[in-house]
Length: 73
Image 1 (cartoon, rainbow, N blue to C red):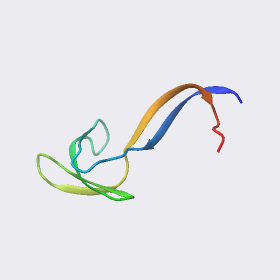
Image 2: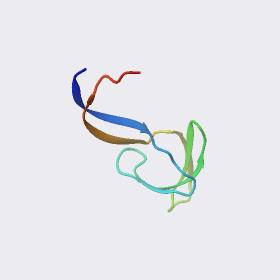
Image 3: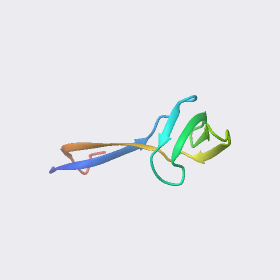
């Protein structure tokens, strides 16, 4: 198989009580994680104290270099 540079994404493993900052998009800003389920994350704004529950949307990304792609399953 040929080797390529590949960007990999996986759901971010949120933890209750965690302080996070989202850099971009409609949810950008500072948040506290106040609830987690398999498919949802509940965040609280530290300024207004309003809470919002959304489908999980944050992903951790990393660049990997010179790896096999497509990956064998």
